[in-house]
Length: 391
Image (cartoon, rainbow, N blue to C red; front, side, top):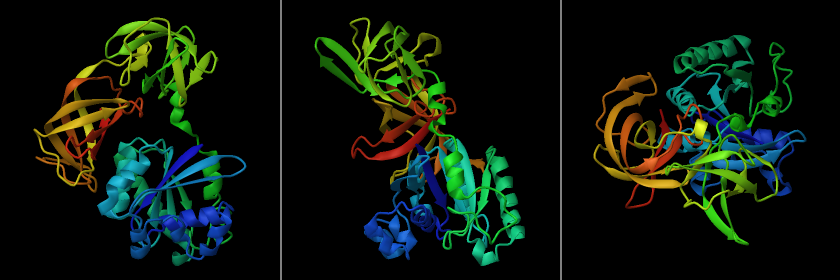
């Protein structure tokens, strides 16, 4: 399965593109075919979205071809809803960023590429849309591609792909376009079917956050989603943050091996005090428990983040109280400059230091996305107000 996030500026055609992709790949239900003339409405499901003609929330849509299953994350383009774009891209294997062939890169295009880079989305492809409005000119496509490549190089994004498309007319969406004979690459659907998935989760260090403890027939099973790596019967494990050692005795399905990203239940060789929020890892590759975090945070709350404020930090299945010690700087995503800051407003990204009330065991985000990420929760309202990535 491939998880695909689409992003871009307002009116660059994200929802229309997804509508066209679903329509032309014959992935629509019978009762949806009547709306195919207004392709954007297929994914803009909120009443406010239909009234205003914009995407506000992330719309998730499942579809499949004979070769692969997909989850499409249609992310908002408006700057006001940048936090929703970050949410949609955080679990994606591929980010599709649309750029209007007439306008080229906009401030929001730059912001979305910057967020994709910060979130370490494994693959990024730029769709130069509305090629029909520039007479399908190769020269215009080249100009936009060079502009994107210059910005991507500053972000440290490498291997960015490009596809010229017309979402409205379907050029290079499912079928290759005859209107652009100068383009010899894949259509969008062909590209989606060939992109690697799963972010190499099975290749990383073993990480099992314990979500639930199940007692059955005198056995304690520790259930959770294997976030990274593999586990086998007999593997030595470290229970974190306590630091006690044990071994894998059995898996609930009777198998000998479990591979990420899979939900499993494990029986251990020893009777230990293990519960929700603990992390199981091999001793040789285990992360160190920490009482402080340095991280990049995308602020999602309406109330700004200020030093001294108290929150809850939720990391995998563990939640601990925390204090925001300092905001080191704010990132200007249009220039990539670090700016002094004494607060982080809604949708702003900054470098922060957090003091934790209890230890956490995170990985650097660039090494393991699932255990290098966390959310910040307002203690009073229980609202998620920040999304963080450990340095």
